[in-house]
Length: 336
Image (cartoon, rainbow, N blue to C red; front, side, top):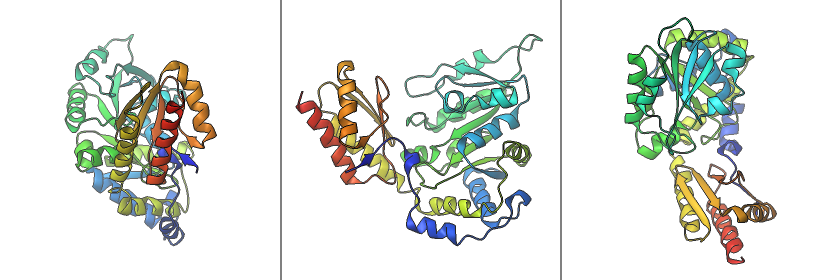
């Protein structure tokens, strides 16, 4: 058996999703004439409670379009020290927009203390950059940020004149975990990006939502970034299908993650943390290399970071994959 738990980005379009893509009505999206793209954008705007939305090719593109829409060269944005925009999006805001990040300490679940936001904002001074944006994230490495925290952070930022962008690559996972609508998280922020190609299983796409004014700016920035596409409705159709069929089923991914955690929890020499669809597994240092090799030989793919491995459940993982992974772990430790 092959069991690939590296990421929920590995999901492949289902046969029904492919049929929806093939039969989609299309036009030229650069001219705003693709009806399926327009429908997707309207759906996301409605889900998030925003005036407008913009279909982008990736979460990196939607996040970068948002950050650059909120600032200008020489400005500064605040961001959690381990957030994706800061660490894993090629410093796009700095390289292409001349905006500098100011990392803020986070707790073990990725949460930011509102007091740390206040202390990070620069006083008006000719020597300082202008702090004009706070970037949040939910989930953070699988950890769900509470609605109340997102609202408090946004209120803190707004009182100081900052805009707020929420990287919601896995926001649907957060909403399913807390059994709340996505708008519970987005009502308090200015812009939000929602990824379609992780847990929702679409092959491509992220949608940025916000005010009409901000999305109009982002539209031009997306074009600058090479994101103007033509008959993009074939891709947007996958997103529409995912919204209709793959949100509620995210609970299955979470339950399977819990099932893995339960199966690994009794193993001596292994620390296991689970939240939403992610597990963080830390073997004793002297066992890491051997365990990594064993998993590779047994065709179980995880992210073998040191000291902690990452396991992610997703649309293409079923109970047999879960049982197999747990058995491989148990066999390895029983043979020590």
